[in-house]
Length: 383
Image (cartoon, rainbow, N blue to C red; front, side, top):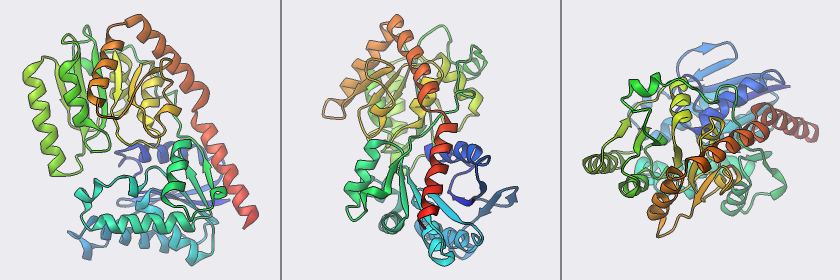
């Protein structure tokens, strides 16, 4: 079975959960199918073809540049028997290539443009184009993979013309060999974090979706003895960047031990930071699943997270962490939940241990790849 996997992000250019998903899915799929990855970037390697936007569009709206990459991908996919695209950035490539070469197209939806209206702030009129591209790809796809049950409901709610029988749930996964407790503390010391004091950890992009401003307002009211570590970069817009910086400076003036690491860290350092955190926090206001919560759980760390999207399918409330409703009292609820975990180390340890067991037992990438390859076979048999 010759499969073309289409994505914007692929190592070494991974900045979000969709990129993490594709990286590990591709690694496992390579032993099950004849796999060729098409992604953004320069150059070509074994099994990987990189595409860049047309130079004539340098400086144009990002959505237009994306469409040019999609056409480049579509032209390069001859000979593939099945196409599998990830996110709106590659969805139109799969759709057009499917029509051009007469092969099935599978879409994995990691998020949905209609549920991210704040992206208009980032893309301007390009947001209308990204929504059109996503709708076109999703509604025409031979199958749509949702990364959680909640995501499946969102897909059917946003695209009611879609046949529910074509929407399948295959959860995100985690490599529990890479993400496991690390006793070392050199990464903490390198960033000035005191390993003898508890700390709250956030890892993610500076976006409206990830809820970082909510977190910065919440941590003003938590135990003053706790440190706060923010591995936060890649702001979506100058506006959210300014808001983040102002809130960070305000928090830093009122409490000691607040750290901002504004760049992407190597995975080994992230694993060490996760392993030693007293609690990991995910304040997202929209999250189809949230791989980062699985990463924290695999490192034996309790999680405080929003009760949104697919997060409750990962974080067991009271078992592997605490869930907080996203409502008028969201920031107060975050502060209370964080203090609850910080104030009871024994309970935190039990939740962290349970999280590790859950991550290992239910979310391995080998199982994700097998379920995905089985869906490919089912589609090709029916084609």
